[in-house]
Length: 194
Image (cartoon, rainbow, N blue to C red; front, side, top):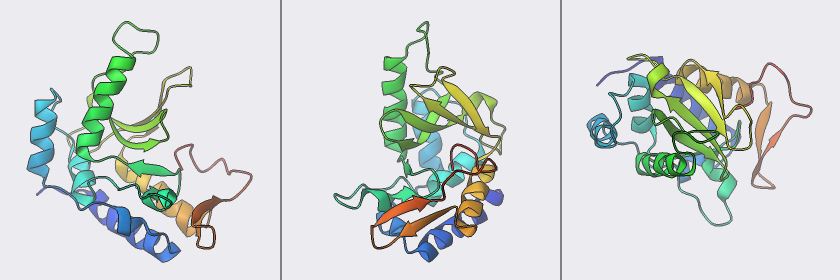
């Protein structure tokens, strides 16, 4: 089993989310084996995944949305819902169909969504821009003229930012409302995805 600093950061993120009182872990699915990830990606015509992507799905294979508790299934900073591996591959296929090669905003087949924000925004691993260890992450927004904005050069950097946002109470869980809340106005040191 391959690891990078991301594995420890994801354990920290679980602990930080629990410390806020958010019910995230109740709705997060168990992780899956890296061989399963590699085989599913190969079946979809994708290259060998970076180690961080294997660690991502070993951590949690998506999160379950529960009626009336939707926000509890999200990562507080950014409000991202985790996609399972099957959901990620189905979502990629849907986006490739919506934005085919040659269209005004084509979906690159090497972009693999890992988390969603509503129907139109995705946090995705850019497989062609990743290394054998690091998964470069981008934000795709169907209403953004640039289509793709690079978020970070690795998933570890994304998780580190989420941890900072929670530690500094830039984002916090409001138990009375059963919802995430956020400092206003936003601070420029926290990137769009947080």
